[in-house]
Image (cartoon, rainbow, N blue to C red; front, side):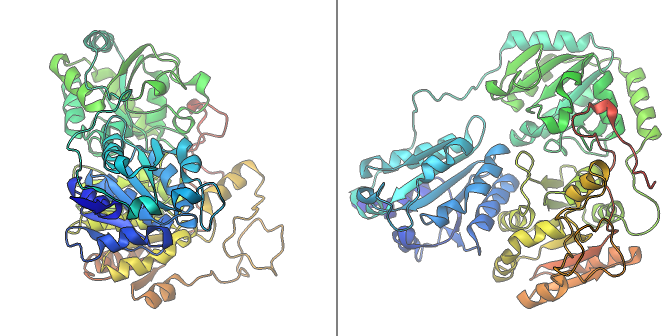
Length: 576
């Protein structure tokens, strides 16, 4: 049977079990939308901007474990996906992004709304291709989904010229695909596992360092069993947080430039560092030549290129995290780690993660979120709000955190929460955002309203781009350059401290929320926190914006100054 390329596109989505499509129409994609018209098996979600669209698909994918699917038109529609493509690919999120394109005969002629989206995205995605032959359409789409979800997950971009969409051809869609040169590793090297276990068994001060790869491979239960069997303490990266419950006795905390004192100190003093599913990026290592210098380093990662790229390792294991952990469980044994755990516990008590006791702090807000929402998906934005969330959120099997790790994308949190709520309609979904990041995709409030998504949106409003302001305070002599969100043209340019004369904040988040049809609550006192959160939890049809007015110069502590090692942590702000 002969059908158009657009009709085959819809058939392919159904064959890949896609029931949710994040899409924004345009001239070079109109045939695809026409084929989707009246299709009951695919829910087409219309966000208000393509960047919001791709972040929503990302949040949907992270929270459900499915492939997120995007559809946009050519030119600006395609280029508006770029930041979201890089965000998802950095964090190994499986997305397939379809972009409309001008007819093949016009490609390269500077046609209206023509861009080389494959050339633009090739370095920030797993695979990108333009379909130039109708006969190759089915196999290309099959390949796209296979590549996105297998091996180290990532983003695939499929560019669909308009004439390919309209051309008639076979309606056959393959059940399987073979790709020469692409063979995801589905086994674990037994010899390396044996060597790793021998090294671990001889350790006196071992540590598991767990990254996002363990969450991606859905190996949380296996990792918990391994930690409990061996008695080895667990430290996580931001992306690995939640692999084991954060309230567990073996969980030490996050590592890195805003990691806990106990976690960073344990890494610096351990004799075996068993890392699973992390790239050892600079945000967790500090000065790389001073990272875990006393340790034998074992590194499990599905991507061979990630091993010894930043930190030289002693025992490399190229494997999927779940397969590797399962192999370790078969022969792992209990270790005598009592003295080591006691030392770590002393470090935790010596310098606990906490903020000042008086006033309304982000810690107190997050502690109430922990208490009121027993089961939830929490999407953070990027900046101080993200860092406080990673320090104080309690995560377990009932709670999941979505955040932009590798790229650090402001504007991610709110649309990611929309995607998560669409994928998990019975779950409570919470956004933790700063006032700056919230404004980057605020237009998606209309999406949340139109799809009746009761999301709880917590805005930590300090009137600054807080993370950069903190660096300016600590390392640039309080030269607050372009970080004050209350700035007016009439203000002096050399301001380095808020005063009572500061102009009012723009926008008024409560009035803005209400203009969309959402609920708005402003909280300025500690006693109001729980009431506001409970009100949001009980609101069932519309999102609730809670604007928390926090201290303007609140800092995230501890911090490792740029260019320093983990041992050089600054534990408290000077004013404390």
